[in-house]
Amino acid sequence: MAARLLNRFVREEEGFTLLELMIAVQIIAILVLFAVPAYMLVRDSANQATAKTNAKEVAVAAGLYFTKNGSYAGMTVPLLKAWDASLKTTGTYVNNSGAEAVGVTNRVTMDASNYCIYATSGRWYVYQHNPNGAFTATTVASTVCS
Image (tube, rainbow, N blue to C red):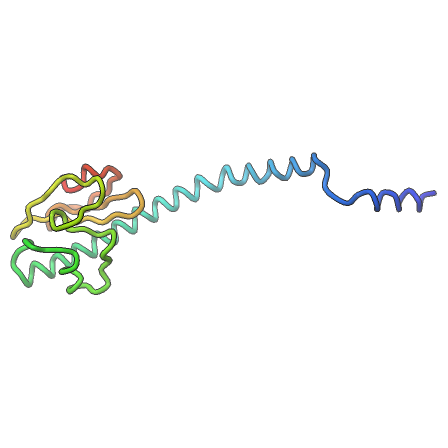
């Protein structure tokens, strides 16, 4: 009798019950609830750091450009690439010297002592207004180079 009953239980249990599946789905949902926001914060921080690094690279190349030409006038990212071959041409900008990032509306006249360079990554814009200015990070494009 016991062997027959045990045999019946073994044959009838071929999958998970609805309750077991619901508990597993709830556990996965709770894990996702904690993991996704943390991932988004890490990704956003990485974008900000990338934009800052790229802006600093443009600033170094701009300094070399100034040393050679005595002015920032006429400076463009392709010309700066001659000073720094690893300089990225996408996501880095020299304000008022060609195509600007979407939403950037301020224009800066480049001369012997003024420029504005910036870089973008994700939602972040990091810019430096004038050679000795601080690097400023923002998510509002219209404040770049202001």
